[in-house]
Amino acid sequence: MTTPTETCTVGVDFGTLSGRAVVVRVSDGAELGSAVCEYPHGVVDTVLPGTGDKLPPEWALQVPADYLHVLRTAVPQAVRAAGVDPAGVIGIATDFTACTMVPTFADGTPLCETAEFAANPHAYVKLWRHHAAQSQADRINALAAERGEPWLARYGGFISSEWEFAKGLQILEEAPEVYRAMDRFVEAADWIVWQLCGRYVRNACTAGYKGIYQDGSYPSHEFLAALNPDFAGFVAEKIAQPIGQLGEAAGRLTAEAAAWTGLTEGIAVAVGNVDAHVSAPAAQAVEPGQMVAIMGTSTCHVMSGAVLREIPGMCGVVDGGIVPGLWGYEAGQSGVGDIFGWFVRTGAPPEYHAAAREQGISVHEHLTNLAAKQAIGEHGLMALDWHSGNRSVLVDHELSGLVVGQTLATRPEDTYRALLEATAFGARTIVEAFRDAGVPVAEFIVAGGLLRNPLLMQIYADVLGMPLSVVTSDQGPALGSAIHAAVAAGAYPDIRHAAAAMGGREVGAYRPVAENSAAYDELYAEYRALHDHFGRGGTDVMRRLKAIRRRALR
Image 1 (tube, one colour):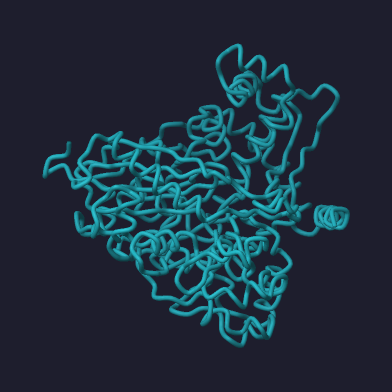
Image 2: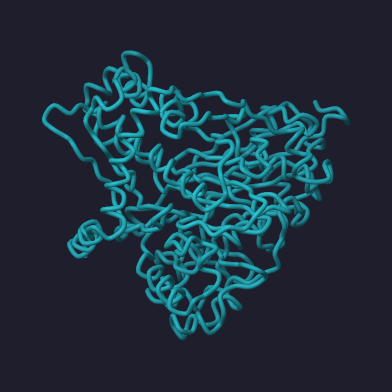
């Protein structure tokens, strides 16, 4: 059991498929116990729960009750695994995927939990990778450019279909009855905090990066009315709420939430955060020029900077978006681990699965081992890593994946390695965009589940031509949340002090090999040629193919 000097906090990381809770000692960041809880409904992208109705292409929904299931299950299990006295837990903090949006009534009840809206897909949570609002995003971008809206440059010139305004406009235009009934359109990062402490506080991170909140205001009433007259009140009626700064307490744990979690009523509940941004303190990346790449199903790149610059294709720059007092920059790749997983499911033949079982390893590991034996360029392939669209630097989810160079001699491990390399080329494109805009990356730090693949890490080091540091925790987001909980509870004066004591990283864990980097420079030039041809106006074939698919599936 904990002693009075061994106070702890709990961090809960809500990912795409599951939630993870970790109990962390406040004095040194030691992770004492953890638990994972899969979402019972997972990602809803084929049929609607309960009705069996087929969902259109590019949809990705979730069921909000699954998030409460994590609080009831993973938090008590983690506390038991840690062997600590719940009375020694002084705070809890959460992080979430973003932009993941929950349509609710005024009291926070999700619309999808009512009989009236249970059969309407627009009443469900729109997951971050819901890309069906691209046409609305295109109109937002075109109108903002036409009007010269000053906030557009803060997002690299593009607002994503993944974000709040595009998703909200889609609901208005496709399900006006849901839009009218929806009192609040809430980031899941804030909704879960609302359930824990009974107060709805918007976190500064998602408000800035996903909600177009810049310099104290949202897009104007006039701008919204020009998009659609019925959208004019979106800010005032659906999303405006007091802003909480990162590391602050949003409130105190309610009696109901204490019963769910087994924690003590009244402990600090931190302001919500995003899974990527919250990982920066876990990696001790709280100074300018330290870029953290949180590599999982997708990759989010976050970095603090001392100066404000406009970077083409970035996801956003927000004052205090990662660490108070610095500009927080965000970029990202919509598909990384998701792409590798898709290939294992669809591209690895039965004999590869059988070989993996015989060796007692995963198919991913089997393909990685085979791919590691190849010389750079031996497979003769080049891929574009756009299977979930392109977040940075093109910000276009109508783009799609591509593999060039396949022949009848191409093997599964060839394509698998080409996909690994394509994601590294995509990361280099982002790093170079930051450099060219005057915000150079001084250190590249990797967090997330994919750092467990040493071949992938070495490919990234070689492609980037710079050392890779790695976060020492394999639960970076959950640890980052626990760090924020410690600050919210008053154990540390600010995030920097908490990160120094509780975070950790191994500097230069992977170093580039000069001859490998030279070989990848040649391949990267080919990647950029394909990137610019398919992504910057050489052809619209990817958009046309998606339009044909949508018509065929009606």
